[in-house]
Amino acid sequence: MKTILISLFLFVSPYLHSQDISYNRKIVDTLSSSAFWGRGYTKGGMKKAADYLVNQFKLLGLKPLGKKGYLQKFTYPANTFPTSMDVTINGTRLTAGKDFIVSADSRGIKASGKLEQKDSVTFINIENSILVTFEKKLTWSAAQEVSNFTLIQLDKTKFTELPTFINVNIENKFVKKFDAANICAMIAGIAKPDSFIFITAHYDHLGGMGNDTYFPGANDNASGVALLLSLAKYYAIHPQKYSIGFILFAGEEIGLLGSKYYVNNPIVPLKNIRFLSNTDLAGTGVDGITVVNATEFPTEFALMQKINRDNKYLKAINARGKAANSDHYFFTENGVPAFFIYTLGGIAAYHDVYDKAATLPLTEQFDLLQLLIKFNDGL
Ligand SMILES: [Zn+2]
View 1: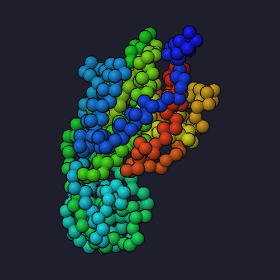
View 2 (view 1 turned 120 degrees about the vertical axis):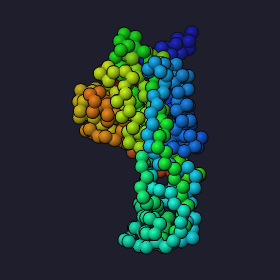
View 3 (view 1 turned 120 degrees about the horizontal axis):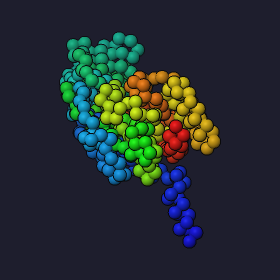
View 4 (view 1 turned 180 degrees about the horizontal axis):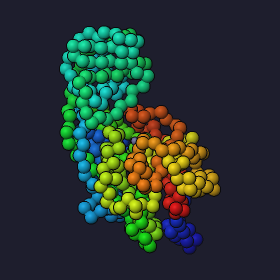
């Protein structure tokens, strides 16, 4: 009888009791796997991720936010690298992602020739418009345009001699209208269904670079998606006074395009959003978190600080001002109170092939889940 009572208590209790993040782990592992090819621009990666995530919302029992289904579709231009990514320097074939990256806006080229040294880190082949640079760290991105040269960045630590000769076969494909979609779901409020708390995270990442290399984006931002889905899982069982809206944005890495599109085409009026919490890079946390917009919304920040102090969740919650560094930005600019939360410490992998699920600790996913539940409750 006692066992039954305890398990009943656990089931109906408003807060979660065991530090079980197996669901979050499963989401991060899945989204970071090669099947999703970095949730970007080649091998259908972003579309596959969107299909998977719509299915997660369905499984959790969430309804679409609007009347037109879960997907809010839009398009934008993207430079992509679907196939050849061969670079040989001084006769040695390099590994894409580890030895070199090609800058996101590079044009494709098939050529070979001498490299002329310009300074200690810059080498050029003028006739083919190829620029080669030494970098301390390789950090990739995504681009909406193609430039008129090819920039190949080398990891300096992998080279003992200067690059003097290059063979290159890189194919790019400029996609004028890449099909992307935000994924929008909700849990209706019991007392005030027209008022919303929003929880957001981008699910896109950089995608792949050639046939064999993809950028897993475990921390950026499979971790934020996992946190969002675990909140959806909680709220599906514990509906609130207000409605809870969930948006998984596309096109963040290429310039906050998904959130910009949503703000220009809101599915529920922006004025109906009481508060929005965006997470991007939520996979660590040994040194706590930083809250962007903390100084813009001091009352809400004080509430978050108090909850954290009372419950001893995170080591530190640092305040930061406004910043256009994730999907909260256009919401704030258009009058929606919003925080952007990211975790601190642990790993340095960022926009590279080392941002993997296997090395991502997910240190604070459970505490962040609890913190956000209590925060939203206190708004
Ligand atoms: Zn990100």
